[in-house]
Amino acid sequence: MTWVIRLLVAAISALFLIIGVRAMLDPQSIITQFELGRQGVTGTSAIRADMGGFFVGTALAALIGLFPGKRQWLLGAAGMVALAFTGRAIGLLSDGLTANIAQSMIIEAITIALLVAAFGILNPRRREALAAERAAEAETQRLATEQESLAADQNDMMAQNDDQQQRDRDLAQPIV
Image 1: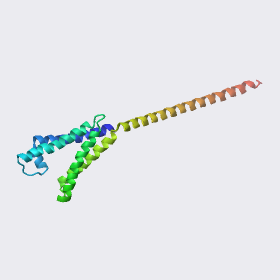
Image 2: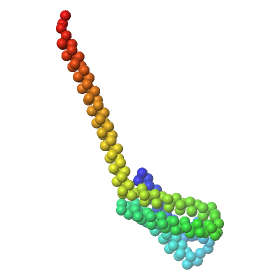
Image 3: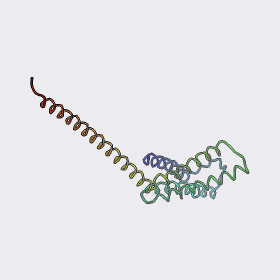
């Protein structure tokens, strides 16, 4: 299960990293994709810095959160995406909804849920509890197998005892 969540976080991080690098290296594609209109040098610089920085920073925080002992970074990444989602929600109330806004909000909501879930799933205490549960199940299985073996041995001994008693009775009778 943990490898699945790690793979999903890595995939969403890769998507954010691609968007961030694209914003830094090719801001015109971001201007078109996000319908930002015509930009001057200052606007293009803001797209490179702000949008590029946001997406690259979020991707790196999520990736760092995949390392042992660093899972709190996942909440930092989730918080950044939650702030972006909040900004879109405010815009939704004042400006309305478009297909691009809805798509972005859906991706952001899924990302937030994924990052928070990853934080919970990658909890070392949870892993320890799962390992203890697996060990308990293995011990229960071992004891059940041992009990079955003892019961079979006991049945064999009873059958041998019955056979011995029958032989003793047969030998005790006189031969006629």
